Image 1 (tube, rainbow, N blue to C red):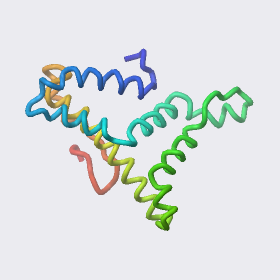
Image 2 (image 1 turned 90 degrees about the vertical axis):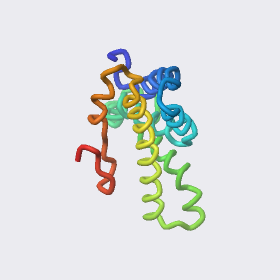
Image 3 (image 1 turned 30 degrees about the vertical axis):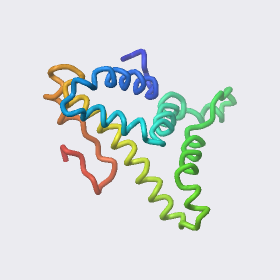
Length: 153
């Protein structure tokens, strides 16, 4: 795990490859359906890339800029803005009010992240992470907004 550090993209890629390898062991093809749904998500790769960039460099991006250090990559905020433009840009051009566009963006990102978590949770629950994993699955929950509380809340 230490080799991954904050590289969410690499960790996800390797973990998803393992899940895919063992997906056939899950009941009723549930894990394979989750993997397929995640692969079809048009936004999750960019969301994970942005989160990974923030985790690796973004927290210090502005400090690096202020201290005149060489910055090799765009800020996570720029990546986030690009993602936002991809998701809601066409809607804004069609006349959707900015407040509604922000709500669409937030809901789209939250849904992608929920589905990403659901894929890992299902693989965990189905025992693809070992025989004791299913016993700990109740610990895998996250609340992305107040309207959908986590299982433990």
